[in-house]
Amino acid sequence: MALPLDLEALERVVTGCRACPRLVAWREEVGRTKRAAFRDQDYWARPVPGFGDPDALLFVVGLAPAAHGGNRTGRIFTGDRSGDWLFASLHRTGWASQPTSTHRGDGLRLLGCYVSAAVKCAPPANRPTPAERDNCLPYLVRELELVAPRTVVALGGFAWDASLRAHAGLTGTRVSPKPRFGHGSEVPLGAWTLIGCYHPSQQNTFTGKLTEDMLDAVFERARAAAGRRLTRSATRR
Image 1 (cartoon, helix red, strand yellow):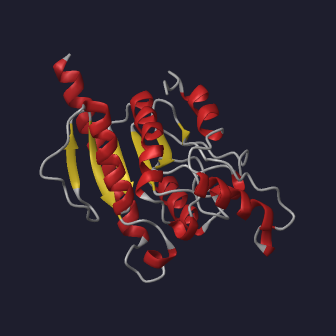
Image 2 (tube, one colour):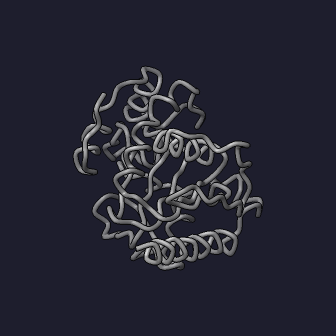
């Protein structure tokens, strides 16, 4: 399938996708049954596209929308605890206009930043299958192609792997040996630098595996890496 040449059109394609029967059934079932705390809300219950600055220097990749977060609100990392951590950090480090992201239309603006996910639908148990991952990969590839960031931050090992696959999809070449994920891992990949970060899941934040300082440091490094890329590009011209 030929994908659109602009982000707005790509968003329409993404939100209409029904390529993965298991994910379609799950996201819609969650939207019907709801969580008690949100029983009066209308769930989005569709694929969730990326959002942010179309000319972003920083591109953040997550795993997938949360069942009662992005799958409810229609915006990735919006309305869940992981998003609370992510956007608070992006605000502290100058990438977001406000520290909270509660719903579409809440006034949040991303400043030189774009946020997306490897898989666009909420998966059961937060675990997409390899086939579902591969079905969604072209969307991530096209987002990266259209945004053309200088730095990509992968939140967790799944997003790290997807980012490497997307790079291979863009360039036709695979990095060998495959770089290993780790918090703070940094790999130059042609036009952009890939930086690894622990996912701001409750499993990581409640246990102290990921702290606010650790998360802020990654986004500060991302800005520095983007600056280095811009400097090199200007030098070449």
